[in-house]
Image (tube, rainbow, N blue to C red; front, side, top):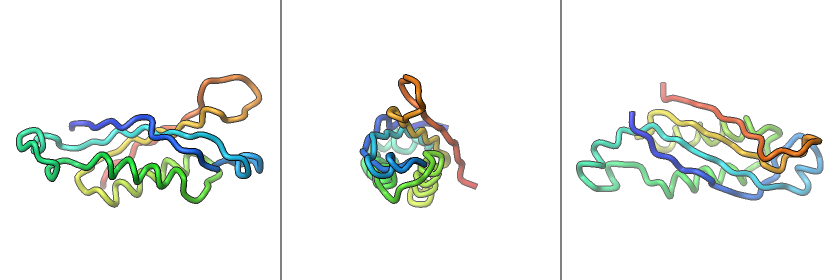
Length: 120
């Protein structure tokens, strides 16, 4: 299967289990890997034979800034589910949600979760 990568979709949002995270918010970002058959688009050079990256990025961003979740695991599930539902050409998806400013009591560069889902 061929792949499309969208990395660094960023937003300020209010996900987290702690009250201050819900009140103050923080930066999040999402990386997507889409499993898609790109042969038809490669031969035709026509967007109708691929998937529109801008629409997929907008969906991920909408879910990222949508209703707050306690866990970034839930954010990842929402993004994966919606993209698989709305874009039938995508056979599988990997969603990685980054929470670089997570307060865990020690210095670190990033906390992230990654899920993979496939169309049944």
